[in-house]
Image (cartoon, rainbow, N blue to C red; front, top):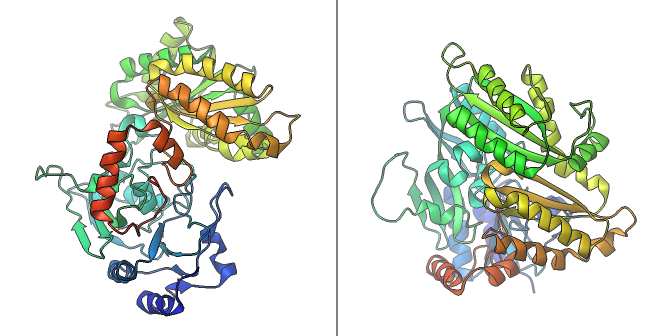
Length: 474
């Protein structure tokens, strides 16, 4: 069953010239997610360019009980911005809602519309003399509305927090079509419920985020990046504790990678190379930054002091410190390209988990044994944000196994890994969200009380379930 043509015609009229696509070939990029796990159907993609048009679209859809799928840059990894296969939903893309509303240097804020690209926001903040610290692999194409809707994390969460910590206000079109204008840039506003936090991480199920007031930070003019080999994950955790004690709040990123990950990246990514002559089992990429000038804080000396102490304690076996921005970029290339490089190794079963940092070494040992018992010769590639407890526990297929046979084990392997995560009081979704992929996991791992509260919030703000149905809650 499809949406009646009279409704489609009315929605086209509301969105205006250049505000819609109904050709199936032209709509395809909006209907497939990056991993090709989800492909949806729709009769219409709308591309409104003002919040007023979005409000009018939502009002019409609410009256006619037409479901809406909001979409930003379509870089999500859990199917949260892809329509179902029913063809009974319209897709609303935010890509044309991309204006800069306000720059406030005194308040250290930037107010932008939801369709602004993350990298452009970073560059604009830099031009203002500030830093917007959210940084992730898809920053060249992801949009800030999607970052907000998924509560994006990235490599700097250790120091700055995720999106929940980087926002002072939101503008949202509610499921009724009303516009909530909550863009105030106040650091302190203790007037009841913090409504913006309902929509951050809600993946478009409660309303459509159309603009945000973002927090900016002093630009880090000093930076030191090091890539070091460590004996094992426990040494990495001990190195993190040492780095924190020596550097204070200068540590901004702390990433762990296994030897297999380095080999995959250098094998498949042009220009990537191993920075060390010898091979080691585990590596850490750490970065310290400061907005103070070198005359006030010699960050190079801080990094050298960290690594000197670490080598004395036998926490570090070898390492390199980047001498300039180019060398720093080369080191980061090893980490940022790992997911992309892993595609060339065949099938990959992925987990986006978080557990207490202190439990990570034991978890990695147990999880490795679990994977070997379930799929002999499978190749775990655990990597990610050790500094905030977020590990991307990815597993590449055995070299001698058929790809589809391996991928057919996804559901069973996910459940057993997630059971282990639960045992360590962790989360089965650290930064990617729930989308359509992990709805069953929500039912399995969330308590009845948690699910009941979420459903009550959903029912209150979206009583007819027109906003991104089937995402987060079934």
